[in-house]
Length: 146
Image 1 (tube, helix red, strand yellow):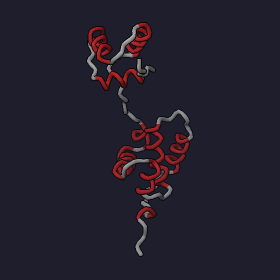
Image 2 (cartoon, one colour):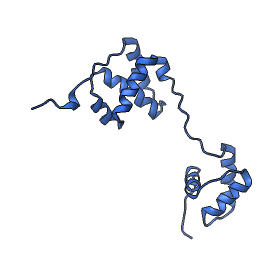
Image 3 (cartoon, helix red, strand yellow):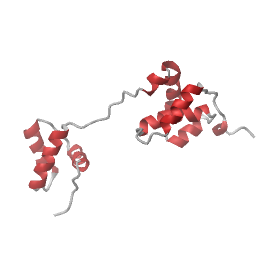
Image 4 (cartoon, one colour):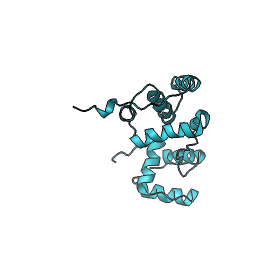
């Protein structure tokens, strides 16, 4: 009977200083989910967990686990942790979203199509129907049958 590949550890070792830095970051409750995963991949790998176990525990694919470790090895801890990821912020500014919400509080729409037309006319921004529904949900509106 062969050895289960889930228990084959990869020899990834961190310096003691890097390990302590990562453990401190794991305790940070304000750490984004993305950064928490990046930190935890290194910590778990350091403790001898296999790539398969890390990916199963964190919901990542094996290429991502290996890429994270390679990024740490190539760039060092500080560059690896400098996450330059910029999430999608939407097409409207926060101020425009707030004004749209005010407008929707005082005007009743039965469908998203007229809202799309209003936003296009008022702000010069085009939305698809699904995109507008996503925006409306994000700013706190829900659809209700009349």
